Image (cartoon, rainbow, N blue to C red; front, side, top):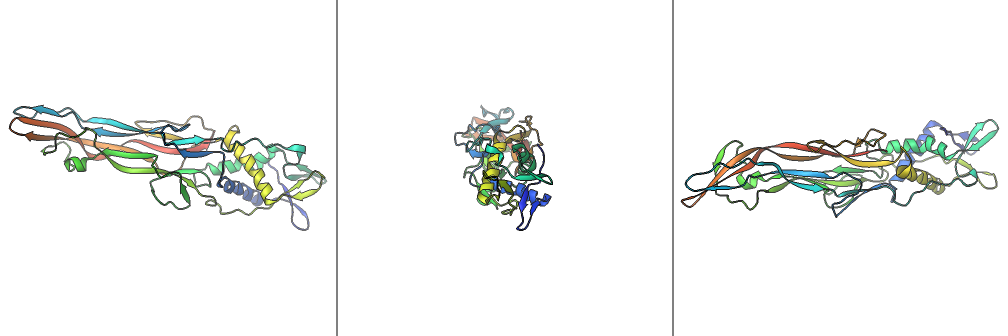
Length: 338
C-alpha cells in the first residue's frame, strides 16, 4: 500500500498525475458524497428514540408549591432548579445506507495504472486507492467545514444558504419559565403582590430557541471539481481511459465503504455536552469537529415571592423563577473518524 501517481493520456503522451490533479480527485470524492445517496446519514426520528446518537435534555426551573394560610402570608419553599425537563432524541444515525460493500478487483484491472519504473505500468491495489485518494477525502469531509453531504445544526428555521433542511420539526428546543407572561419579570429577591395565584401548573414554559438539522448541498465545498481521468487496463490488456461515470462509480464505492465500515475511517456523528449534562466522545481516532450552532439549555438564575390574597382569610404565597438566563448545558453535534 502506498500513495501512487496514476497515469493518464494527455493526447500525445502518457503522463503521471501531479499533486494538484490528485487533489482534484479527492475533492471530487467530497462532491460525490453530497449526491442523492451516501452511506452515512442523519435523519429525524419522529418517535424521539434516535439510534446511535446521544440524547439531549432541556431543563426548566419550576415554581415552588403554593402555600395557603389564614390571616397571614406563609413562606413558600424554594423554586425547583431544573425541576422540569424534556428529552430530545430526534436525531438518528445510519451508517450502512445503500448496503455499501468493499469493491472487488477482478483480474487486477479495476483500478488505475501507475508507472512503476521506466518500462512497467502496474495497476494500483485497493489499498493504494485508499492511501492515494480516499483517506484524505474522508479527512476533508470531517474537518468541521460545510462539506457536501454532511450535516449541521442551525437556528435558521426556513432558509440556510447551500443547505437542505432534514425535517421541518426542531431537533432541540430551549425553553424557560415564562417569567414575562406569569409575573411581568418581577425583580429577583423581592416580594410582590399580584392577583395571579393559583397557577395552572408549576411548569410554565416558553420557547426561547429552536434548533434544526440541515444537510450541506452538493457542490458547496468545491463546486463540481473537474478531474483528469486516469488510464486502466481492460481485459484485452489495452490501456484505456475511464469514462467519467465509471470512475465516479469506483470512487463512490470505495468512499462509501470506507465511511461505513472501514476501520479508523468510519464517519460518525454524536452529541457532546458541557456543563450539567456533560458527555465526551471517547471512540474517536480523529479530533471531533463541531458541525453548526451549539444548542444551549438555559434556565433562570433568581426567584421572586408572589403573594395573592383571596377574600378576607385566604393568603396565598408561591416562589416563582425570575432573573437572568444561565446556561445549564451546551450541546454540540460532532463529526469524526472512528
